[in-house]
Image (tube, rainbow, N blue to C red; front, side, top):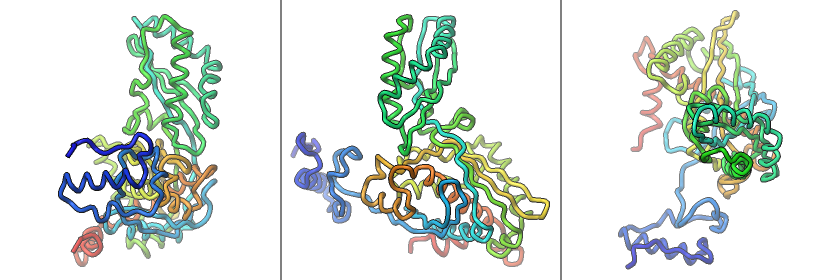
Length: 394
């Protein structure tokens, strides 16, 4: 039997070719595919999302809520789907959502937007690089017109420049509508680079991505300049709410956060929160986001203090939250249903989804932060107890 995976040049998503791949894998592995090959959606809908399709991975989806959001785009109560295999996760976020509701909701604000492609333009020496940087600045309007001719929704906002030796590292910053925008910005920037190369023959060469966009990686430049959308979620939690629901005082939470802040500094962490990737990954997987973008989205900063009334103020800012409400994996049947649960599918809904995501993370941060404490009377720990009760496969 051939070792080449079966493929059709005419239609690689037909039932026949999928069945051939399933049989191929069963014969090669000696394993029966009883579950991965059982799915309900039209396989043609996977074109553009997955190659060599043979089945699906079924991941449990739980729901937490209601999450009360006082945003500019997300307003009201939302039931949030979370795809995860980690027991206790949904329960913990659900508990944090109760804290948010009892506190009157959480305010969310989208503060910026810029998706990048980051070409590097290479010259023979630093002087040539410097002069080209000035040329870029002088010709921004013409470059903007070239870029925006390739897309119906993308807008070129700025060209950042970082000149090192004879290399002009840039970041072409775009707004991208309701799409995440990596492919959109890639195409637009390629067209621009080819136009620039024709207009500026002194250039030795260019790379479409010199790495300064730090795609799917955390970076200091993203913490300041942003990538995707920058969003903040914040609230003030009354002392009594903390004590009644989380059985902790503002002083105890403040102390725990202060210790964690120091450890984040010592280890060089990309954020000083407890586990923002947990909630984001569960929401990303449920709603068809590019999972690798967690590498950037996880980057954040947490800020807190005890108010003059003795309550706890808590805020978290994500500088590089990359999510879409339209296109890509959001169009798949299961993922679309999860988006529709929150009225976040389609055009005009991306900022709403971003605000819900940021609020969701705060729910988990509050719950986990409180669970670290040790009961002085019994010596028990909520985090350990919860995982013993809900998080073990028996």
